[in-house]
Image (cartoon, rainbow, N blue to C red; front, side):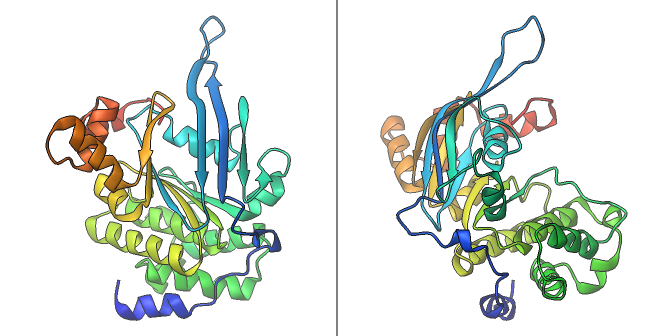
Length: 294
């Protein structure tokens, strides 16, 4: 991403946020207390625990990483925060708003990007973004200009924004999903493996853009990823899940220091992952082709 694009981002006026996002710094961006979720997989089988007694607190402006093997509960956690799944027990608040009692206020503050983002495939990227803008009640003219600007900064040329999404590569479609989420200027941005499937250059562009959105739009970001280098670059705090439970958390430096003591040698973030989950990164990637829920 060139310096010109970076300067453009810093001078672009962000889409106006709802008044409800103007909260005091004493209110956490995300508060989870005792969150538990199980799934019933058959009438004669016991419910399967996906998330068990998870508690997290994110301050405004944090980029918080969630790491874990396949089936550890990462994506389930994101879906619970976004309201796509209901809680069995516990509570979740977004900037002081309870996600169950104040559902509409919360929906105005968050947006989500998943690895399996859905589109109207026959429509163009711009048409998809404008549809999202109408749902969120954004001014059409302003939203169109912002949509083209955001996609441009993600490496989607304006001439490509009018072609059907189905004609775009998997990586380009993921960029469109990120642009769609950013169009609404979410105060809490949930990124569920946002760079999966991207080529190295596109991945770098997206990572740089995530950093800039965090800095210039004061966005709080929850990021799940299998890319440990990405987690180390972007995340100030990292939580490691295993079997739906938090097994450790801390800054990348703290986690590596703890693992260094356990191993008796200088540890990498991959060592942290292997030590706390009992899995190697290669094993985790190989399981991507399976049916197991993240």
